Amino acid sequence: MRSIRENPYRLLGMLGSSSRKDLDSRTKKLRQYAEAGVAPQLAPDYYCPNLGRKPLRRTIEDIERCKGLLTLDQDRLRYALLWFIDVNPITDPPALEALTRENYEEASRIWRKQIYRTTGDLKPITEKNYSACHNLAVLLTASTTIANIISGVALELDALEQGGVQAFLSDKLGMPIPNLKELQLIYLDQIIEDIGLRPRGGNAQLMNMLAQKDYTAKVDLMRKYAVSATGDLDKLIEDYTQRCQENKEKALDGAQQLLKKGKTILEQVELCFPKTDLKYRSTSDKLAKAVLSCGIQYFEAKSQDEDLDADSLLSLYRESRAIACSDFVEKDIDEQINKLQDWQEEAPTRRAESKVKEQVFRIKARILAMAMVEADTIPNIKAYLNDCETELEVIKSSLSPSRDVYNKYSTQVAQVCLNSLVAAVNEAQEEAKQGGESGDLLSRLSAISTLKKQLKDAWDITERLEKLGLDSEFRNGRFSQNKKILKDLCSQLGVQTEPIKLTPSPPRPTPPPPRPTLVQSESKSSSSNGDSFWAKWVDEENMGCVFMFVIGLIVWLISKCS
Image (cartoon, rainbow, N blue to C red):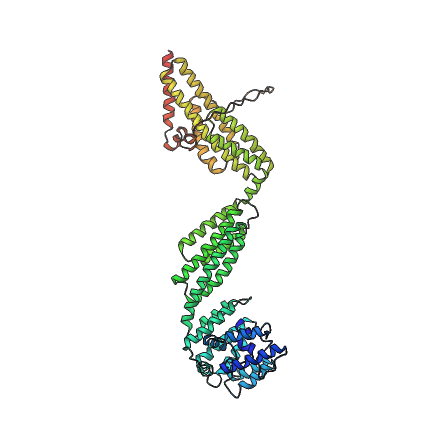
């Protein structure tokens, strides 16, 4: 404890109840020894060189500094509360004499005998033993262990509550002493400050004891401490938020440290306010949101990298949710948890895609070109499908036996292809309808022939799509519906959809179909949204319209020919 280790009364070798005259006399003697360069020969000398972590020096500068620290009455009182006093003429002198010999165990034994029963229970604090209680409290507070420090603080509060220390210091220091509440606050404020400077901390344990113990200044201290703790949390949040923004790839570490330190402060706030209190709820939400923000910074920076520590980030999110109090904060955290879990589920697919990234890149480029640029014509559709099938086969063979990536991109390829196919067939039907209504007989027959060829090509493409690795929802849903519609259209116009059984003959090599020049179009939204003329037949349950149109057109053409 700094206030014990660096107490000016200690360096001067005096008791906390020394008068100003005694202080001036001792300071003068110590300066003379220091100027002569010899060790001081003082009696008594309560220097206690081995009390605390390290002994103090007694240079001229140190002596003058300590004298200056005891100039103001308020400082004299504060340091006196944290040093030894001599009140009981029977028990205090031998214990204090043991201190001068650095026999701290003997001093402790003498004082303990005055305040503890043989059973270990604390005796009532009276005028006879309050100085023993105070002196033992100082000795314990000088310890390096937090358990002893807290025991010493508890004893000092008992001694102050008795009132004897207050009256004694008022008499010896020759100055008015504040009331008991103010006196306890002076003492406790210094203790809390000192423990906050300890490398191993201890504020949480101290505040837990102070929250449970009864003493005059308790309510005021708890309220004051809560305000201070929330201010410390605000500074902590600001500091770590700034760190995470400056180095997003290290933001997970920052968020974890913020959560750990913030929870410690939050526990201290909880000692002062219940969890139902608005002050606690707002403080808790503030910490949870700050931790979430740092976690998001990390995810955004690392989501494209496989070394993202998803498990630690998920644990961080869940811990931050546990301290959140408001529904809207919990909702924000839940959204990020779901987003992260989706990322984890997609991790195997991402790793697989990284092995065929060139093929994936070309497929995505081809999909984009077909969906946004190229016209919905059968030649364009065939060229698109030819290119994509080549890349899909490479993906399939490279990632065998897993077919997740293959199925994923097969479905995407098929969706775009089906959109364009629906648009092409719809356009062919419209052209056939217009030719049948206004053209001559040859034009009418040509329109029917063109429609049948379009349907045949569309059916062949549909069968090719069916062989791809389509996901079940698409295969059994929109793809299956449109295939049924197309088959009905082919049946009505006599377009062959079943394989023809022929006598086997030697295969004749056929040249590959020429690749057509791609045709640009302004927009594909009308043919790629799934609500085109072809697809609407399923939604409107109006298959009869197609049948009546085709039959009527054929009958009209026959009548004209005859």
